[in-house]
Image 1 (cartoon, rainbow, N blue to C red):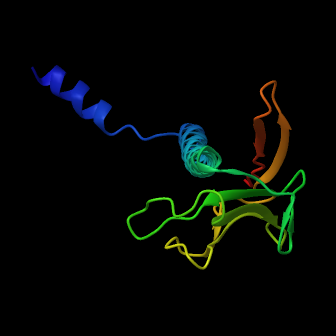
Image 2 (cartoon, rainbow, N blue to C red):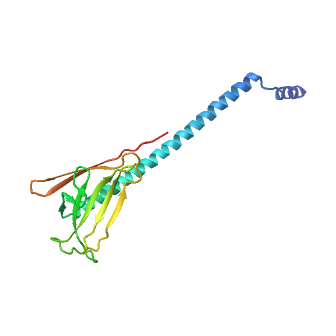
Length: 181
């Protein structure tokens, strides 16, 4: 029994060599650096996913607004006020409505909805509602797609009559997002 105690006592007092300490320290640094890199990578991936989600949300909003306005349009206009229709501007004529949201006079009273780019430092798509004096629809200017960076929305609008003489509107929204990191 005393022999076993001597073995235990002798083995518990053994120290690490300098080489063992250096190797253990190096391995610890490698593991810590790897963990830090993975943490940074995950944070960047989360940020990118969040921005892509916001971009998709804005694209859905613009697409829904365009679809709703185009469905309700009574026609297209080549120009209205300072807005001239082209590949980046769409001028819609919408029937004016009264306080009960009933159409006032579908032949003579119209509100206008214009989609056009606003090329400031960060270009965005703008939706302008210009209400007729007899309409209860409010006039407004609203920036849509303002969460984007870089070239946000460039609308390309082309309209042509189909076989029945009705107009078909094709639109394409281009979204460019720049990520750093």
